[in-house]
Length: 241
Image (tube, rainbow, N blue to C red; front, side):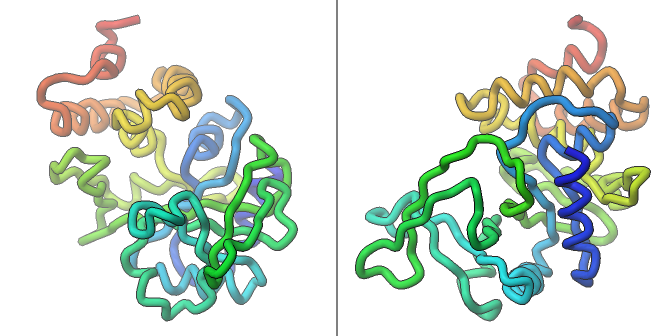
């Protein structure tokens, strides 16, 4: 875990813009221990640096891709390689994949008759080499990390940047545990077949180590986002073991 995250941080540290490790690795950086296997490394980058991120990756020799979904139904589930940081579609993307040539996670096959579009097959469920990054674009405003409408259930929920992004003892920036646990509390993650088991591990392993102020913020954020209740509020308050 430390080797992959350190390699990613060394790769990114001269990028010239803000970034932070997110996903399960962020919680492991907070806890200083391994929780579970990981299928990828996730990075949070702010929206204003979308083109900068693509340019940085291309200059490093990596491929940058968008995941095609309902916009092109016949190609749903394919990847479109982005070869130009000025691509107008970048502004609309909320995440991209960065794939190093020869990546051990995927098998890629070009879609017949579709320029820069590739079918992909996942061949390894655990990332063992630093050859793949998922980049999630987040918002910031007036010195705050701003949760998008999906994560915040349409509510205005924010966290001060100096509390939302922390640094490990090795100098790796990562999303604070309460920020990550709030995002993971969205039913899209907490109840989905793909995410449910591993995200429950993340929550159960982390919640008892939250500082008081972080726990209070998380409870308030969940109560704001889910006024009809959320099953994790009870555990955070100590009402549920």
